Length: 314
Image (tube, rainbow, N blue to C red; front, side, top):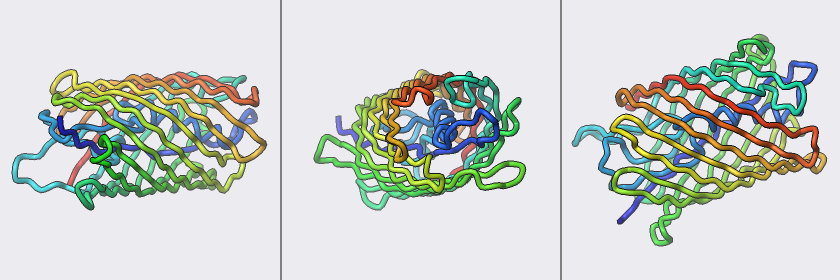
């Protein structure tokens, strides 16, 4: 079957406020929000969909993972390159501080608004840019409440002559501030490169495998690290409106300070229900294990929850 897939990538990297006496290194605080991103059903790091999908959902394109599945417009309507999106979710985590000791379980609200632009430059080359503002509000650990602004852009190239492998590269800027005082908590830049292969079927179901490297620079030097990961996942259209996702990622975190190296494993299962082109709801469960050559940095955490999502294309 002639398959033409496009990459969906998540480039969010939020951080938490180190306001407690048991706060960890800055890099560990940023990881808490990366774990939240991986727990969202549609927000898998990578996925794809065949060109000749006959379902009512549109082809996957860069950034769709942030927004949920797209629905095909009636014949004759033009492709819409802009998307406004918003989400409101509630989560519970067993380890909000991502610490080995003094674990603090808590629930939190996550809200987000943003704008995305996506355009095909050629049949095989796609450009995507996104601007978003996120809001984290903890139920008990309110001192950790913060806002996070992210802006980034990337390109995705499909190698049609080489087994339809997709190459991707992306830049992202992140700025986190205290929700009360607007104090600067974290300022960082990342550059992501990688490759992915998607295996898709006429029904729109697919599995995917890939490799990515994320090179990070931060104003807080202790938070600077590079990530090298292998990942795989699958999506199935369980009904006309219901999608199921599974995802796993195995990564090496190479910190630039002190020779610290972590092995991180993440697994996610999720369901997403589409009410219409604009509205959907999702529920998910994620488990993360992190083991470091510095045993004090070891942690594990489970996160579950869900929310509602809105997207308007124009």
